[in-house]
View 1 (cartoon, rainbow, N blue to C red):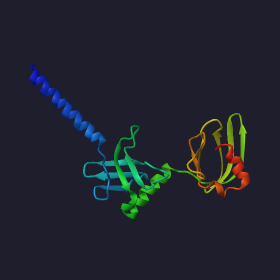
View 2: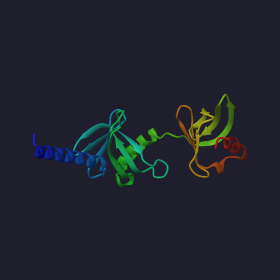
View 3: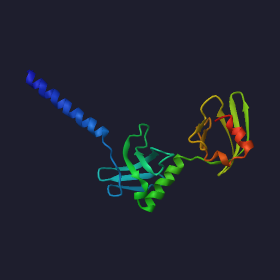
View 4: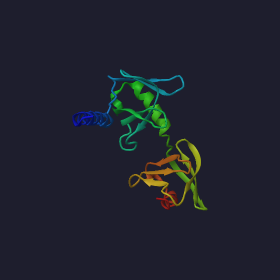
Length: 187
């Protein structure tokens, strides 16, 4: 094989690699003009674009606390969760689609709000919480030595239990002084 043929082959390989990198780095924005979401009989969400139909997709928030309705990642539902595209702003879609996607996000990001902290008992490296949430009374356990309680702002806190369930205290100032003293040990 001549040097000229090797150089041409190398250029072809480089050009193909450049196309692959460009494809991987490009953002595919999903809009009402190029995508249609629908509910499946099983209660999931499907997606149809001009290129393909996905019988089921999963939806993730890129910024779940600061921009919950913007930059939603639509992915394939398998273990690799390959991204199909991004919804820049859910409010640009019709009400039916917004409702469908918001229901799916509510399932994925289920997070009861803690209204009252009845008790927190610490034993053997675990803290056992008894609380009242917006969904009713609840008991859960957190690991005392880990970062189970995360402060999002001066007054906003997320609590993650040992089963990876999340609970929210949106405003610590709404707790009584006694409740705040209980929670303060974990912040």
